[in-house]
Length: 308
Image 1: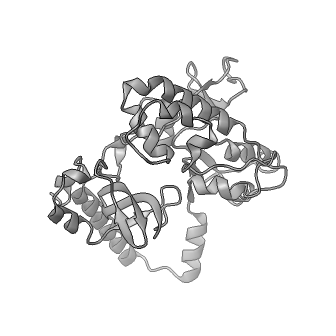
Image 2: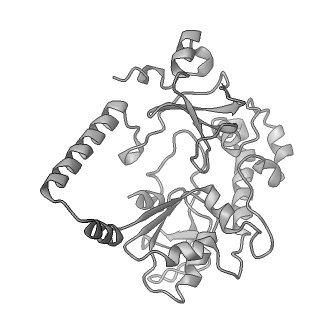
């Protein structure tokens, strides 16, 4: 068992000063949306590969709230956390396999380049991708908001203030996680979810090509673009690229998407507003996977299939 695993599920304020010193010795902080290491701002504090919490870095100092829970951010098959031992074992097995393959066949630079070009590509998109796709705004000049300050963007501040939340953060992830755990916040949370869906549904891709268009046209049907984003911009780009290309990559919406619906009868996904090709029924909205610590990747068939 890893020396870090004993801290899983504990809150920062319940640990000793000695624990704090031990955990902070090799720590770094990642931006929640881009995954980049940051030196200032709010993000995910990594103590090791399999232990993290939320916190803030400011002028080189890391601040972690006393109520912040330490958890394992590495998720494996079926949505179950992967232990450090399992992670190390997988790496060693992979390394051994690579060494054996290298011994079996030495390739030239040209062969290697050709091999890489023929292999499938997987592109993973976070919130920064949609921001970059419409830097000057969408078709109507509307820009996508970051998660910080998002509640004010939706005009939800007064409603959420009535919940008397313990968190002082203005980040959507922190606010939603606390509301999700409290039954007295159900009505406010439902209204927040509705406004989130309405907000993202309002986006329209610009008439001129975007980064999404170039990305899709630069890949082929052997490739995959997986996105965590809720907005419909990637879908809209895909729809118009279909007019000029017939070998576009596959798409996977790992946290759902406001533009995608599902026909439960025929188990077919399609664009909201369209109808199922088999039964003619309208596609029903799929629930977005909201930012809670223990996400359910299995209940919704569409999201489960996206991960599989």
